[in-house]
Length: 95
Image (cartoon, rainbow, N blue to C red):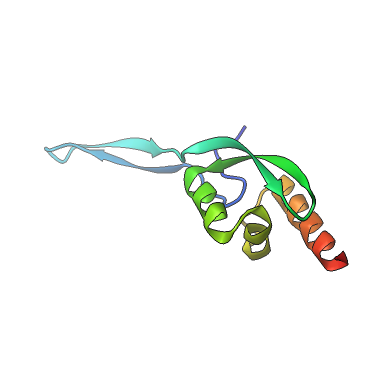
């Protein structure tokens, strides 16, 4: 399982630990990933995603999974999230 957010594409970054004496050693910055189940109001079902805490706040801010998927870029979404986005768009077009 990769350490990548399924909704925003946020992943692992690398950098340096810098001591007081300015000694630099390599380190890894990992995203704060959480396994969550989100409900789609349009499709009337829920989906499991592995998302970062910041993405979870963004979904909440935009008004839920359906509203988030409408504005999300296809390049940032995982394959499973992209399928959900297309299903939501299809259901909204029919309604």
